[in-house]
Length: 199
Image (tube, rainbow, N blue to C red; front, side, top):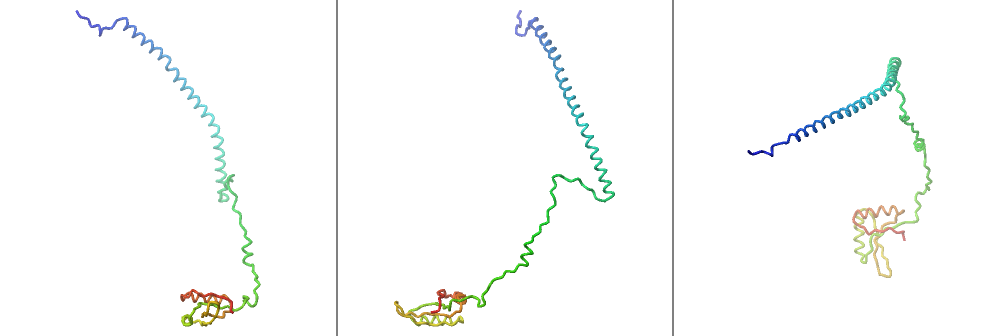
């Protein structure tokens, strides 16, 4: 007769195991519901205290709003315009700027002393546009200037370097007149003109 010792459980050990498990369940189940109940009571009482504290503040604000609404409706009926309470953060109205210098500038006169003769000239001016060794070259430039409507002269001068033929325009009463002539020459492609005092 063979016995199966692997599947066989001792009776005393099985009973002892069942008893230990049931005792653990009983002790844990008896302690467990106490903590959630205490937590629920604390939360409910805290919520109730919160409602009780805000109850008084809402009653104080509501009458103030109601009286303000009543006063604005009566004002609208009588004056057709509601007067809003002033905001402490509201900026004052923009000041009107008064500029006095505009009127002063419009009525201001600037006086400048100008001599009767105009620009005081230091003498007569001449404009030299070329200097050549050969007289034919000087006469050629004189002809080009004549085609532009200006009159030039060819002057012969002797110096340490020999004989030179200068093409001269003028005399001009002021340097400004000479500058006008020089600009006219530059437009025609003659860029060698220089202005000096008349000699």
